[in-house]
Amino acid sequence: MLCIFLSSLKTAHKEAERKVIAQCLLKLMNSWNTWLINSLHDLENKHLVRSLRTIHCSRQQGQHHQSSIEIFVSHAVLRAWIADASSVGSEDGAALFSVGVEEDVSTLQRIVLFSTNDYLGLSAHPKIKHAMASAATSEGMGPRSSPLIAGYTQHHRALETKLAALKGTEDCLLYPSGFAANIAVITSLCIRQKDEEPAAIFSDELNHASIVDGCKLAKSTSSATIYIYRHNDMRHLEQLLSKSTVKRKLVVTDSLFSMDGDVAPLRALSRLKQQHGFLLAVDEAHGTLVQNTNPLNFSSACKQFADIP
Ligand SMILES: Cc1ncc(COP(=O)(O)O)c(C=O)c1O
Image (cartoon, rainbow, N blue to C red; front, side, top):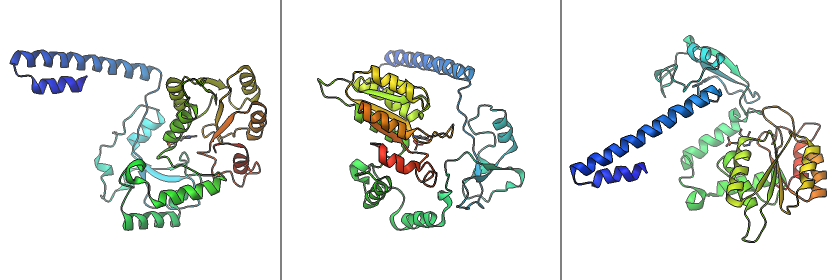
């Protein structure tokens, strides 16, 4: 709408025409501003305003056996952080973090962060760092295009092959992010032909937001029905499955729940799968490699039971 107005403004010839269009434009912008202000107030009241804070990664880090990282933040950032005050990361001003400038960290607060997802410290592993640097030196950064156009290289295929072997699956498809994967996988599985009945999705109540969004999209694009079962509650899931007469059922769960640190009961899910014949999709974002040495032998259970690990 705004684009149409702007292009009309450009092409309007008479002064009067221009005036009317400019007034409409102003009205439209005012109503968007009001909407924006109201929405922000609403989010603030619900304590849902997201905070982005600049952290300053230590140059000294590189302990690949550690999952924690050392960072530095200004005292203003730390105060806002502890107070859980909303922020867009501007407490410091930009100068402190200028690229290439030798930083003076003496005035900053040193913190050890345990909240990253780098559980195995692989981001600092010397082999990975060298491989990244050498790939960038010899081939440049990034695939230069989306996979569908010309961005699917032999390196992507090699990675897919290795990941399929790791997961014990027939094949693997890379997505640019976990969010993209969940949206694509859930909506694709729920696509239906003209006369086909919609699928039913059964999703754990603590599943990651990308699974929740994937389910919502499948509902709006393919009329899939969504059932939310209580966290890891197999009785509740069984009740919901038993009531459903839908043929195509999809059960989707995180494997290791990152916020609570507990794991999905894969063996129980597998037993239910045999009874109810659903497709089981397991999001292994936090479980892959991490759980290999666990007595639960989680990853191999995932390989064994999940249709889509
Ligand atoms: C279980 C789970 N799935 C998917 C995602 C989304 O991954 P990404 O940040 O790569 O989009 C996350 C992110 O933390 C996650 O925890």
